[in-house]
Length: 225
Picture 1 (cartoon, rainbow, N blue to C red):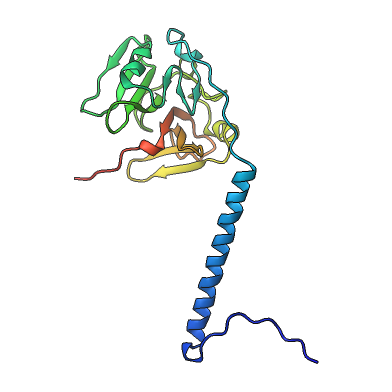
Picture 2 (cartoon, rainbow, N blue to C red; picture 1 turned 135 degrees about the vertical axis):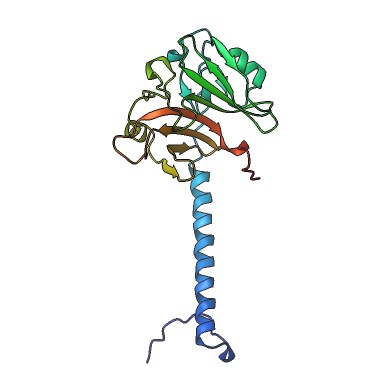
């Protein structure tokens, strides 16, 4: 007797071979997507994200160098905090108001150089991002990493490669229009840890000139004109 090979759903004779092949390919892709989604859901169910340990409250009166940068914020300035409370918690010699409504606040330390930037949410009420050091890749200011907060053992002035080793799995980005370069590490809840570089972040000699903590879920949409 003859063994017959299993066959997929037969196509109508009127459909034609090319149309039948496309339909079969689409069905296969759909099935694979469903299988992948199901597998991901099962994995997340079996291995839920670990609950982060509560962070220690930073002392607002302590030197900035003793503050820590985490995905929750920088020192006593926490993502989601009320803006007025956050600004009051910054122990700085000078607070510079934004040039326009909804803009970034700037805190300058007693040394006159070390800076922190606090960006409000779109409605201006809560903290959406905190930046230590340079706000842009080409601000032309030399920031002393020893006087600023650090992310773990990674300080401003260190090589981007150190951030890549300490926080693997991130993304290296170059923005052509603005010349911005950074290494980003995102969490599953939408927090972004950004290491701003003085050149192409993929360059082994690239150095960190700023570190940002941001809630990417409340990022302002780009507007033109």
